[in-house]
Image 1 (tube, rainbow, N blue to C red):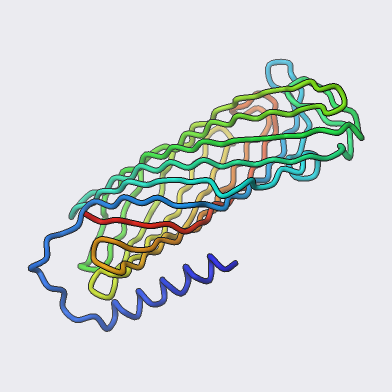
Image 2: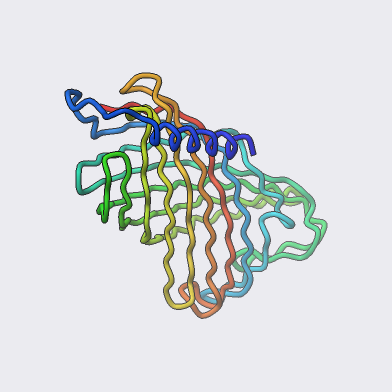
Length: 262
């Protein structure tokens, strides 16, 4: 909640500064590149039910495995923009763990676990994103653009049966097209920036939504603070892209970091 309030404050200040800002000096060279690194606070909730390749699954990461965020993993971004285009590369690592006695019988990729079995689960998600933005319309301190790109997710998951010591490992991957709109604005002669985006994709019953906001306050023209928040939801019904599995996944990612313009 604190991060959301900080983002809203930064956006509000940027909007007020834009309204009352004086004409920007044209003597300063444009700063087209931005590099940033951050520490994030992710959350993830998913449920899987059905079968794929003859292997059944019935599990919920919250109620069954109790997966919770572990630590504050690091991430990084690299951005470039000019008058008509923009590019963005992003990388994040998300870590989760949980330990509990199962409240019900579950099945994970063909392996059955009985109720009351003590299990320990760990998951690490690596996320890579490449994004291209074409600016549809723009003003000196704002623009709206079309986003086209892809996000690649790789998950390394291990579930340990604490009663027997047996370990089950899974490494699923998911490629998610990024298609949507983004908007950017600045104020206080470029010392405040904010970006919002919304991406949506649907294919063979699969649907994917992702939206977020990214706000930056520069203490100097080339160095500043960054706060961001994003949320995503994936729905994959039986018979879509994952066999007869019914998959629901909700995630959020927010954090603070530093940004350098050059």
